[in-house]
Image: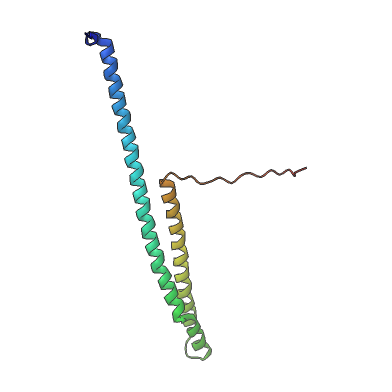
Length: 134
């Protein structure tokens, strides 16, 4: 027969150990859930950034395909439009290219966020010695 239930100190120690295990398990589960949430959020942001980049890529290609700046320049040389029209057409082309470049940077940044959310770390560059071999 086991009379350990009469040893109150041992019973309290077992209860405290069980509660500590439960607390540790709860912290672990919370950490896992937080990591999953961060990963999901990073993936959603990356997906949105890719969609935006694709949309802006099509817009930039359409702007380039219209040859608006080239046509405006030819019209200016022919005396049909003011130079302001040439500048506006060139500004529209450059604006489309700028928006595309910014979107590509955001997409790359969001991909890094996905990598980091999955536990990846960025490698640090190895310091090179200033001394020669000999």
